Image (cartoon, rainbow, N blue to C red; front, side):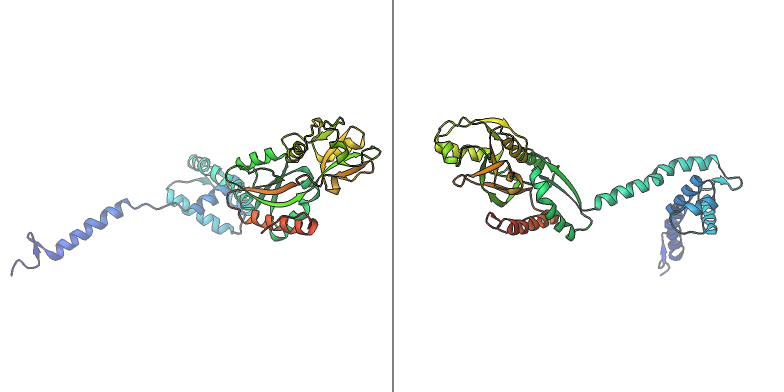
Length: 332
C-alpha cells in the first residue's frame, strides 16, 4: 500500500510537476518573437521618406502619424536596437542595414504587382493573312470584345507555313489561314469557308475565258501568283495538272492585293480568290475558275481550345454564315 502513488521513490504529484517543467521550460527558453512584416513595410516608407511625418503623406493607404510612431517603437523593441534618430532624422547603423535588406523587396512590389495584374488580363494572340486582318477580323474581334471587354489582342500577319510554325512554337494561340493538307500533329482545325479561285486579266486583254488559255497547253502570258508553297497556288497547280497544262509563275507577289495591282499595270495574268475586296479594280476583269477546287480557309489551334479560342471560333463562324452563306463550311 505504501508504494501506491509513488514511482521510483518519487511522489506521483512531484513527478508530474517535474515532467511538466521538463516539457515547458525548453519551449519558453527558445521562444522568439517573429517580426511584424507590416512594421517592416512602415519602416521602409519612413526610411525612404526621411521621417515619420513625411512618410505618412506618401504611404499608399490611410494611416495616422501616432500609429506609425507607435509601430516603429514596437519594431525597435522587438529588434532591441534603435533604427533612427527622430530629429533630425538619420538612420543608425542598424537602421541603414535593415533598410538595405528590405528596400529591394518593398521597392519592387509596385513593379511585380503591375506585372501580375497585366498577366491576369485575358490575352489572345492571332495570326492571319494580311487580307483577313484588314478586312474581316476587325468585325469578328469587335464582337469578341463585347464578351471580354478587357481582352488584349496581339495580331500577326504571315503565310500559312509561318503560322503553323508559330502555333507549334506557341507564339500565337490561333491562326486563320488557307489549308489544303492535314495540319501538323496536335494542331486542330475548323474549316470556315471555301473561296473559289479566279484569274485576273487586264480589262483590255483579248482573252475572255480560262478555257482559251488551256487550249495553248503551255500558256505564254506571264503568271502572277503568290509563292509556290501557298495553298492557292498548290490548288491551282493540281487543276492545271488535270488539264495537262504547264504555266510557270513569272512574277511572285507578296499579297493578293499586289497581284491585282500588277495585273492592272499590264504585267500579266493574276491568280487570285473571288473576294471583291481584292479583285475589284477598274482596270481588271475576272475570269472564273469554277471547275478548280476552291481555297479552304480554316482556323487552326493547338490542343484543346480554351475559352477565348472557343469564343473566337463561335464569332468567326457567325461572321462567315452572314457574309458568305454560299461559301460557308462551318459545322459547329
